Length: 264
Image (cartoon, rainbow, N blue to C red; front, side):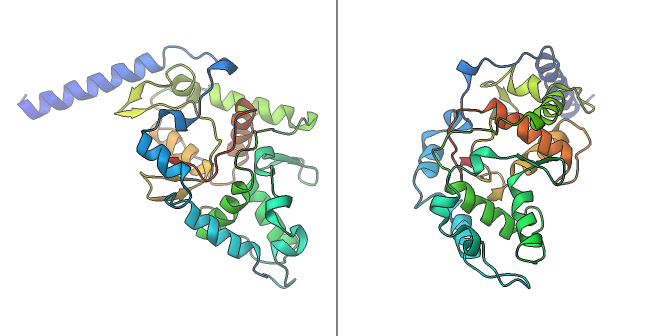
């Protein structure tokens, strides 16, 4: 075996040992230990989030404000026609989603609510997941809740969906046999492949990720994690993702909304 092959073998062995350690146990985090992903960032990255004049996510927020006031669809209505001033009507809204929709018998996340308003109220075509338009409008709505505490609805109808989300969070998946909890409950603040493992509190989405060089939704992050676990990723908008979002928001209850956050 040549030197390069030995190096690759040693690296693969070290990575396998790291995953074995991570997969060893999974225990839920105590509420007093909760930290935002913001707390694990460098001062430079924190400063980028804190200053709206340099926060790149604000470019999407500005686009979202324009969309808020733009008439669309055969109904010829803008979001502002129903909801008027977003600074008032949307304050705290992002902190309460996903929320139960009686007509569909299950929770919807904020992206789904926006698209439902487009199709039913504006009689317009829905926005594609991860499109500039959907990210911009949800970022604009989320920005109105910045500083508000996460407060998922106290709705008995949500309980089975929260339980389903928790089960997915705890379930080992993929070729690496990992669960979300193995990383984000048991090993937060440690490093994996040079990156700090956060606690997975979804307080800043949609957020600007330096790795992506763009804004992305929570579901994009969830899909990335599943791919990293060598597990099957669901389609955007899948009920499994919405249940997991709901559980994650429940874990983050009482933490402040940061939208649009910045992450490495």
